[in-house]
Image (tube, rainbow, N blue to C red; front, side, top):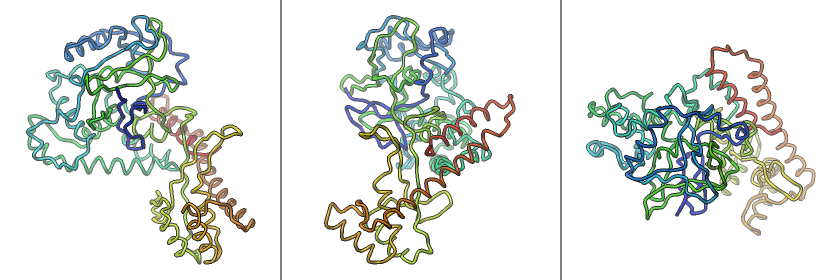
Length: 448
C-alpha cells in the first residue's frame, strides 16, 4: 500500500511509501472548529452521487460517508460512527478518470511530448461534450465552473496587478503560456474530431487543465487520476489520514486517523504548501499559512568591477540562476526563506547559500574570491560557507543581505496597504475574494 502523489508543478515531492498524498483543494484546518453537522446539508443531487459511483465501480465505495453541501462546497461527512483505523472509502481504479481513457482514434495525431495534465484535460473535454449522455455525467457536473475558480490563470490583468510584487505574478504568466503551448500542439488533432470535442476553444482547455491540476493524483505507475468522491474530502493539516493506493488490489482508499461522530465532517491531510502554490495551482489561500516561504532574489550589480569574476565563480559552484520578473537575466535565486526549528525555538531560516552569495558579493579583490575558492576546494567543495576572516567584510555582507530583505518587505507592505485602502463594491464578490487572497499571498511572501 503506497500513497498517491498529487500532480503539482511546484512540489518537489517524489513517489514514496511514506509520503502522504498531497492533493490540495482548500484548507479548512483553521476553520474546522466552526464546521458543525449543521453546516452539512444533503440535497437530492448529492444523494444520487454515491449510488451512481458504486454502480459504475461495481462495488461499495463507502458505507460510512455521505456527500453534503457546506459553506465550503461539497463535503464528505460521517453518516455513521467511525473509529480510528476504519476504512472510510475505497474507489477502484476502474472508477478513476485517467489519461488511459484518452480517445484511441486521436492518439496517432497527438505529439507524444504533450503532458499528462493536458491528456486528462482532453478526456474531460470529450466527456463534457457528451453532456448527460456521458457515463461520467454525475461526476462532470459536480466539478466547479470556470467562474467559480480563482486560480490566478483566470485573473484579469487588473487582478494580477494586486500580486505584482509576488513571484506568483510571473509564474502565472509562464503557466498560461505553457497551457497555450499545449493547446496549440493539440488543437490540430482535436479539430479533426468535431463529433467528439465540438468547438475547440482555449478557454475551455484552460478550464479543463485547471480542474485536473487542482484535483488529480498521480499513481505509482505515473498515471494521472481524477478520483470521484475523494474529490469531496476537505483538508485538515493536523490529520494523519491520506489517500492510499494499492496497485495489487487496484484500489484507492482512506483510513480514519481518529474517531468521528455522526454528522462530523471528514477530512484528510493533502500536503504542506505555501500560499503561492495554493493560489496558482488550486485557487485559494490560507490566512497565516504556516507553510509559507519567502523567495529572495539577489543580483551582482553590472557596474561591479569584479562582475565577470564573481559571475564565473558563482557559475562554477552552480549557484541557482534565473530570470526575475523585471527581466534581469543574471539574477541569482530564488533563495527560499522559511520557518525553521532550532534550539532557541522557531524562526526564519536564512539559507547558507544566501549567506554565501552575500559574501561573494562583498568581495573587493580578486584575491578575496580566490581565497573563497581555495577554502571551498580544501573543505566540502561548497563556496563561502564559513564566515569571512575579515570581520568588517563579514558584517558588510550581512548588511547587504539585510538591505535586500528590508527593501522586499517595504515593497510588500506598500502593496498590502494599497489593497487595504482600495474600495470594492459589495456586488463584486469575485474581486472581494481575490483581494483577500492577494493579501494572504503577500503576507506570506514577505518577512515580518
